[in-house]
Structure formats: structure tokens, C-alpha cells
Image (cartoon, rainbow, N blue to C red; front, side, top):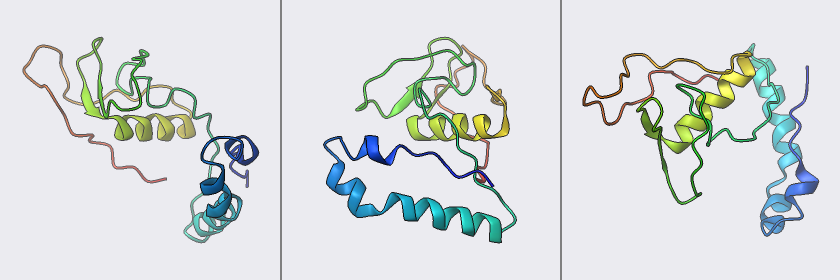
Length: 122
């Protein structure tokens, strides 16, 4: 079973170092892996780069500052919570898919926002 490769040493060198070290991330990942195995699931490490920047609907990169909490893609028209967009991208990377097309989203149909139809089971 592959273990998730979270760069704990790298995170510990940031301004969040005390929080990262206090939280016991290494122990958390070990517990998560065991719990997943007990539930018949597995943990899969994915590259987190641009998971909140890449559109989970069309795959285009949509740069945004961290304080922008909604992912609004000018390419395909999808508008979803930034964290939901990132979670879909992470799930798709774990499943080996680069982009999972969203259902029922068409540009210019008055659909300004849509809730994610994907139930995330990680």
C-alpha cells in the first residue's frame, strides 16, 4: 500500500511550521492509511500542484489569489467553490483521470453556479 508523500519537512520550514509540527501530520497519514485499509479503501498520493487552479470541468488553468474562494472558469463557464474544485481534481488524479466532465453545465444558459454532482469518497 503506497503511503501518501506529504512534504512534512518542507511544510515545517514555512510560517506554518509550529502548526505543522504540532499537528503530527506523519502520524495522521499513518492513521488515515490504516483506517482506509480497514474500510476496504486505499490511500493514493497525488501531486497537489494547481489542484485549485486547474478547472475540474475543462482542464484549463484559471489563476486566482488565495483569497478568491470561488472557482469561476472563463473557458467553460463553471462556477463552484474553490475547495470543491480542488477536491474533484485530487479525486480525478487519484483515479488516473485528468479531467472529469461536469454534467449539465453549459456556457450561456444562465447557469451561473452549479453544485458539484460528484460525491467524493476518498
